Image (cartoon, rainbow, N blue to C red):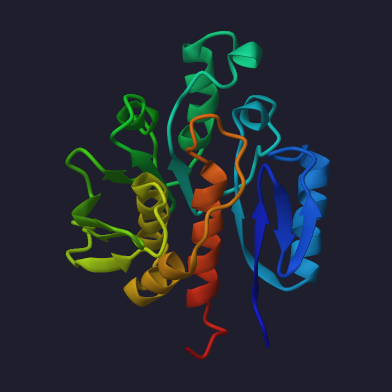
Length: 231
């Protein structure tokens, strides 16, 4: 029996091995639940999704219970809709404010909004960073003609995990996905394998920091660690 993981994001929706063009980063509520139903019918047990600030403000994901939520950064991408940076921030914070105590709130402590967005959350908090002190951080960074390698140190878990990188992908992408993997109980071996096999995905983000890349990498990690896999 083969288990599957679903993906919902800006570029496409993925149900197991099937791919569909995305109509929205986060679909409208009715479409979203239809997509969830299709995923269940196709044997999906987990879903990785990009939750847009628009969808949070419009209550498209209202009532959903997330096992973990990841904050990447706050830029000026959607001020045409939100009007001000504070409104944009508060829209994103809806997700973290709604997390139950059984969930994880994972945040980028290198971003000025990172610590603030998890203030008041009921969830357990896990931080990641490249430049600062955090639960998960980049150590022993090495660059070569073949790409990048470094280690992530999840101090909250007390273990030291080597992460070989075959391509030069932004370390924050990888640390965000690794943090979610650690929080969700993905093994170090599965994280290593997922990172090593990952390739960058197309992104519409002008600054090159794509939440979809984080989601795609986490999807690979989850596939690697599912109980239905023999290895």
